[in-house]
Length: 367
Image 1 (cartoon, rainbow, N blue to C red):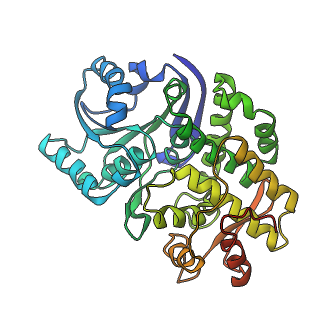
Image 2 (image 1 turned 135 degrees about the vertical axis):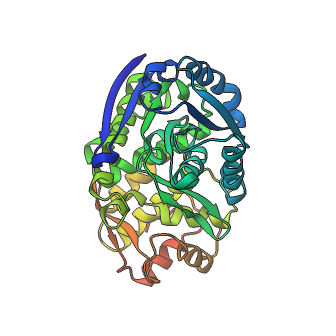
Image 3 (image 1 turned 30 degrees about the horizontal axis):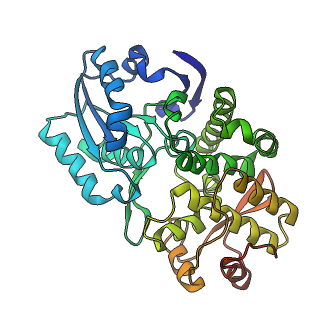
């Protein structure tokens, strides 16, 4: 094991570590310290069942845990109430009790649905996140937001339930398809935009090293991203205020995902388009320098991410955005940028400016 970093998400009695390194999946002692009972349920998907599950099961055998496994099909469309109920059925038929620990071995879909099952099974049991995608390592595995999707919108049904540990093993990223890797980079870029201009500069200067998956560059990017998210979560665990800045680009992105049936774009790809739109709107409102808005778009393009919105009707986009969880009392709230590293949440957006951004269509929003 090469443990590069150990970060703490400081939430009082619910504080937990994020381990970042290599060989973590094969470290029994690391897992054992976070599995207090003798029962473990590993939730994964059909891809990871071949690539990583055998290694995890061998490690769990080393701590004499009684393990059951549940395998989902792969894809965002699997994060639904039907599969959530199937996981609960599995836990019940396998006679898991309140001392059990659920282990999420997978990307954001597996982590979100496993966390929601853990939050609700017997009124809440422990769970460990072992994120296998870059997006999950830097975003969805940290912070305790768990959910499933509804046809009307993404993550509309869920709960806040913190994991007891997160194991971000860089080795798991080696076999990640290029498209999924790039989708994770979108969330990494987001942290530079919302809270750390120097990190944004670093990303511009080290894009090639990240694309080559250089271990040192990966560990640095994951570490900075997790540290930023941990700091924000510590300030606002249940998204009543500052935590909403983590959703920069997401209101646009979630609407795009919903209107394209969660099948055309990976989550990070939709968020990349959403960040370009949020930057464009920020610029139209005179908040963000146009050159910085273009820097956001250009950096995302360098990582091979889509930056042009699909052909969607502006009225349909507005309607879908109205189903976003950040809507309060019928008022749409958006995360906008004043500069790179400085964003804020507002509901004071002139409708005509928002519609201009949404009407950009397949043309790049260059103003």
